[in-house]
Image (cartoon, rainbow, N blue to C red; front, top):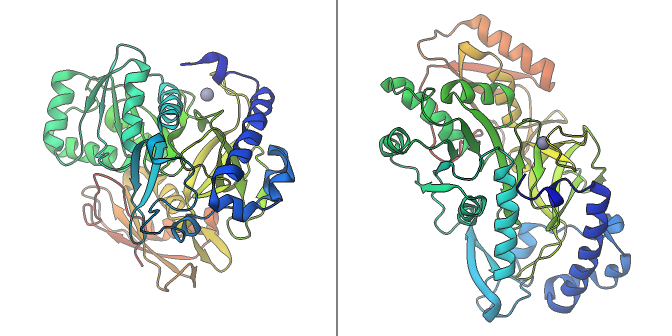
Length: 428
Ligand SMILES: [Zn+2]
């Protein structure tokens, strides 16, 4: 553990500290944030963290709507220009990027939380880590500083040149590699096509982040076999912080590395109603800054749909753990049943040697609501033939596990698009 006195602190104690931070943060918002002053009115008198669910949720679109040429960040900007030391952009799925400013203290807190999250994977001082984020203007860049903070030797690489990356792994012998799950999977295929012994390389830990997938058992097993390494995942939210969550060696959900800086809640994505953060609960993750200065957010809807574990973890870190099930944005509703494309991939992945693990959901109707059957393309394993019995078995399993009627089309290996960054699981 990077900071045992923090990470193993009893969760009740953490919540008490967070409650004090939260009350100060609320006072700061009322004093400095035009956006929240208008929204909260007297609601801020609602009290502490225990009553937070009474306050309104914040949606990214609402922040965006307050941007002007004079204030391109939005009306939630609290800090003076002289206090801002960095401005990241988030790659908005629609329209123009939005800007995320940070004060020096904000940036330091980001790196602190990110370092705890990545250190949970088991990487240790003196080891080498190769990273593959094309961070550029994006918040992921701040995560790179976490590797220095942990005391690792950092070998930065982008995506786009797998040959060079493979050569660096062979020659510089890093113990760990940081990739998106899609790129980690791409490297496994790339190595198999060239007789490159990825499983025999120096890499014994693969740290994945940037999209859901690293926690899906079948997908993870494939990555672990291909890399000959242990795979753990991390997750952040550009508007809130980088690598807020990180999985430990137990591989049973991600711990909140950003504890003390961020408060987590769950809601029902359809109604916005609060869902108790209890063992086995699922819902959309909602995050609140506790000690942020530049542009703090209150009850921000992350669009990440997670499942929660609260049982004690053998690693000693306390607090709830989460696993990302999918993006609320990707969710489809088929005859009243919520279906995440990442969950479809997980079910299909369990067909192991028969399939490649790549899928594409192709909804027929525009929007979220779909009529059954939901068309799903499933890519076969290398050299496998399209067997109608396999398609039927997959269809049956999807119906049993996800309670959704699908039509399964088996397609040859290599026919679905590969990504060196994030995979597309839905195509309308
Ligand atoms: Zn743990």
